[in-house]
Amino acid sequence: MKIELSIVMPCLNEAETISFCINKAKSFLSDNNIQGEVVIGDNGSTDGSQEIAKRLGAIVVNIENKGYGNASIGAINYSKGKYIITADTDDSHDILNLLPFVKKLEEGFDLVIGNRFQGKKLSESMPFLHRYIGNPVLTFIGNLFFKTNIGDFHCGLRAFTREAFNKMNLTTPGMEFASEVIVKASLLNLKITEVPTTVYPSGRSRKAHLRTFPDGWRHLRFLLLYSPKWLFLIPGIFFMLLGLAGTLTTLFSNELISEKYIPLFSGLLLISFQFVVFYALTKIYATNHGLIPRKESYNKLFLYFTLERGLLLGFLLVALGVVLSFFVLHEDTTLEHILNTMVPATTIAAMGIQLILFSFFFSILGLKEEI
Image 1 (tube, rainbow, N blue to C red):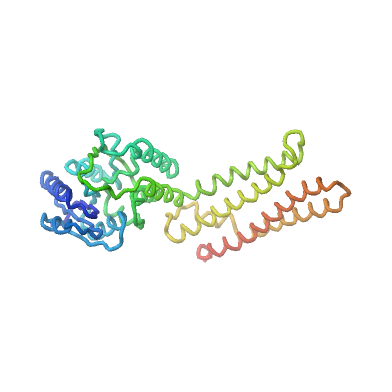
Image 2 (cartoon, rainbow, N blue to C red):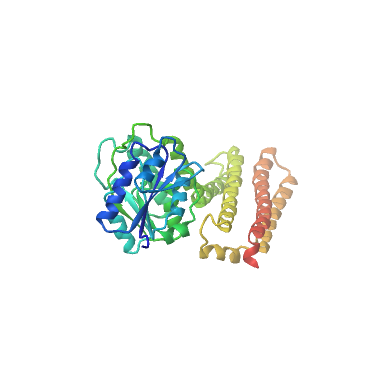
């Protein structure tokens, strides 16, 4: 019979708890009359986890490349279900109550996330730093960057359709896999929802694989790299406006800010301009290589900004900087006045040269868009 649901669980040395997880998964399928399978993505266990899983009737897929993401993706690729639910093998997830996830998928949602904060709060089910600091902070950042409305970004109990999985093209090897699923689904405009779920204290006696600070950083790094707008564009525009305002103020109003700050503001203007330029290059590269889904606004970018327009604006900035420098060097004035004008003039010329170089590189990256 055709497999309707695949319950996929990554595993690395979970002999203490894997039997409970598999039995719960099989009981759920049987009790709800769902044609399904249990697939274990084993990541090189040495404690007999594979033998236990096989004895209980689960499908065991050996994944050589280490990492939570690798184990999950490898097992999902091997599975056959129309719907997929991922869970951990430490017996912390409520695998007996997966029906809300399945119903949401049947209603037409592409991705269903478990929300542990809406379920029962059990003592010792989640470390203090994870419950009150790490998860809330990363969830807030994820929602802000990617315009989602998820209450628990990192719950390992989640469900998605086979079609959604194929579209997301998931690639991250480690714990950041949890973030990648939501980020990719959001960028692809997939239908996302969440359901309450309860997390229990882990059934294992050994230390968890999850490392609080290294894995937290991996999640944060992934969110930043997949949102160049927040990493480069918004800070760049903010500091560019600050540098421009400061430069103009020092030039025309000596009473408010000392002229000695002109080099500082000019340098800030130049650096922030590089941020904006790097945002554009990162966006193009990531889109062309399939890291970020292509949007209609991306195609319009090559219509509004062309090599010719970029070169024209760049040469105008260079010319403006040269002209300002020429006039001030030929004035009979103080050295302080010369420097206070030369610094902004040099900055303008440098920005023009950067814009010229950027225009050529921009055009190279967009060649296939022009064909």
